[in-house]
Length: 69
Image (cartoon, rainbow, N blue to C red; front, side):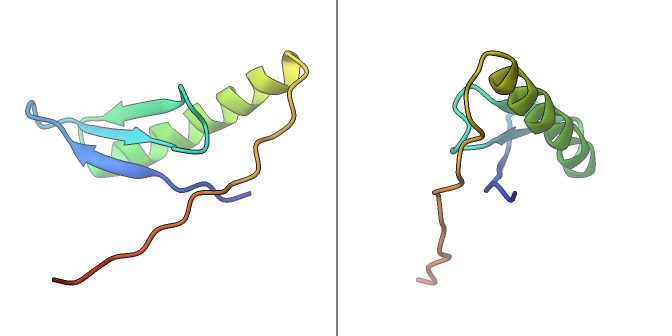
């Protein structure tokens, strides 16, 4: 399954990753590469936790569009 991940650089230089379809699931890293590696682990752990609690895997529903202005 594919989930949209949003990366944002924080004031301290770290990179934060959030997954809109998985509320409460986020990760970070000191670089974009590290954040990308860490967010994959965060998603897997989040989904495992949902399954352990008896919840179904959330179906991705968020889409995006880049708008040029």
